[in-house]
Length: 253
Image (tube, rainbow, N blue to C red; front, side, top):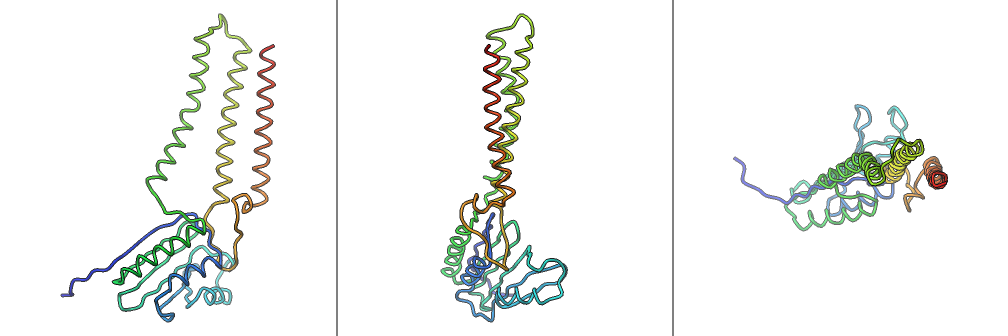
């Protein structure tokens, strides 16, 4: 029967991390602090083969010189493992195109919590944020609720306006006004959703261990196609406002 043991363990998950060659090297160098270099393994799996090396640079060269299929500059996973073998210091980092999972453990509590804190600073500087399931669910519910009540609120406002100033007979102008308001609101909701999609795309997670990645604002990191799409969206939105003002002026005549 084995003797009872205890050790500290910290597990965290980060989303939206933008990790290029420089960020990954800093991350792995920090994670390996206090662990012998011979006890560090960096690996990746491509198809049914796992490639391993002692450093990220050696791993990238190993993959480039291999017979792996596909574009060898495109990666979708990478793993880092360091274990001192004594049970005092152990850390594992698993990275994919969506998230980064960090798990530090061992009997050396100071090292475990210190590594977790330092790695958190590195990943947040790379655009990452701690995964918060409750907040993500709340954000999705709020967006769904806003979309669900927008149309009923528009219809309710039209009904209230008709009750305040009822028309003896349905007026073509009133119907055109109602249709214009409905179309305008639909376009606004669609434009907002498209803008949010473009911003999220610019802030999406990136895994690129073979080269450095651009930094700066989300606008500077957006692709040319996304910039054109967002610019067209802004122009269309301004045109919609101008058309609505013109339509309203015509109705007042």
